[in-house]
Image 1 (cartoon, helix red, strand yellow):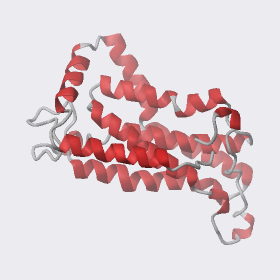
Image 2: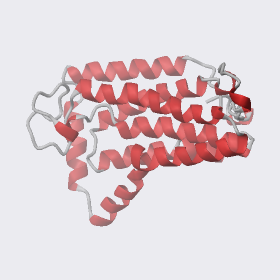
Image 3: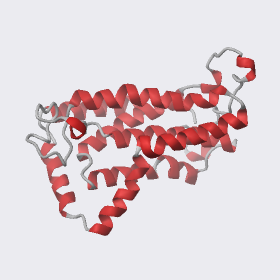
Length: 240
């Protein structure tokens, strides 16, 4: 699961900065509004409720965190190692210190906000839950927490993920949540793009952490490796 190349991280971070600067200067606001208007005008009940259900794949507190806790608990039980908790702890700290503060700082209203200037960043009229749209927490969560799932499942299976498993865990949820989040009007399309870029940086940072080699006290045997250092097979195209 280790990540070796730094250029994708730097490229994603540069993209996040670029789109933030562009939005702050009024670029892409018309695109955001046009996409949101189209989505709101094309929501028959079957499509709307299907999207609502699928969007739960990106719900951090309600879905992703509990699943990560369950997988962590199983790995702790099997390995008798406190290291099994480290991926969950690292993901929680990373998302808490980055995505949340960014949403508060940029102060952008969501598409469903009824007040004025709702497409702009640093909106003085926006407040409450509909004032934290940028970047999309859905997309940041789906990138980070499914990376945690991949790390934990790899350790539990004691083998690298196959190509199909990797796509199901790391690619499919991103595509589904991106589409449903924009379609439902939870976020502007640029919110979701920014969330993906930030999530890529955080997820790749997470996979760089050598959890099984972090110095820990003896802890009466509970500091043993937990099988968190497996790599994907080379036929999958190298490290993620």
